[in-house]
Picture 1 (cartoon, rainbow, N blue to C red):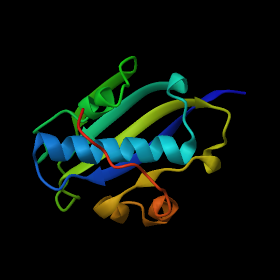
Picture 2: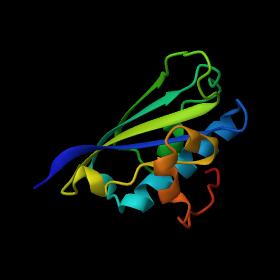
Picture 3: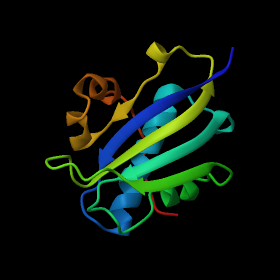
Length: 134
């Protein structure tokens, strides 16, 4: 039975530039898709948030550059909580799947591994392609 499940992920950009936001976001999206063997036709929508110090580019542009042109996507800023991880890009992908919640791999890359260390271990062995601008 197909149900809509959330796939979470987070990463950090090395700086507040368009290139850095796009590179970090693309790497994260590719990791999420690869780790879960996601068929984009089964994705309902994708929500992106960034820490308040990232505003050089919309993370959704990275998805569009990957060819995700038919998906509903939304970008927003995270709450500005004192001491929270800066330069952070978070993703919530809503995915129609028959997998159980325990079978979904959530991806936390780079410094974002601090957010969910128990989840970061699952992405350490992924062999992901390097993002190249379109």
